[in-house]
Length: 155
Image (cartoon, rainbow, N blue to C red; front, side, top):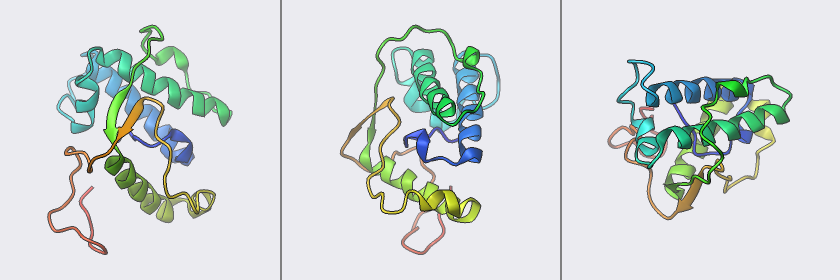
């Protein structure tokens, strides 16, 4: 499960569909509707909110908006009805930068044509749910000890 801090516009079709499914799964987990993934580290930043369901619903709404911009048919009725209150989760610039590198590596293998349109983007924008602050990569990331430049990271 990966709930990107990156704006969903950077994801190719495969990535956007996967994000929609994974965010719906996250919503189900937070609603107590499934037994799997209950302890997944990607959920910690949602669980830390006063209303985790509203936070994941806000996340899903932005993914749905991106789907509409691409003429996809994601079903908005699947998003929990929590009202439209303002929700923001604090995340670090280090996390966003890490995810940007991670996504670029995936796209190099999966969809180099899609990646080309983002050439020159050094500071990607974040998903609208997040407010960025200075800081390192999130502790929930599983980065292999000693992973440096050119070394494979466990993701």
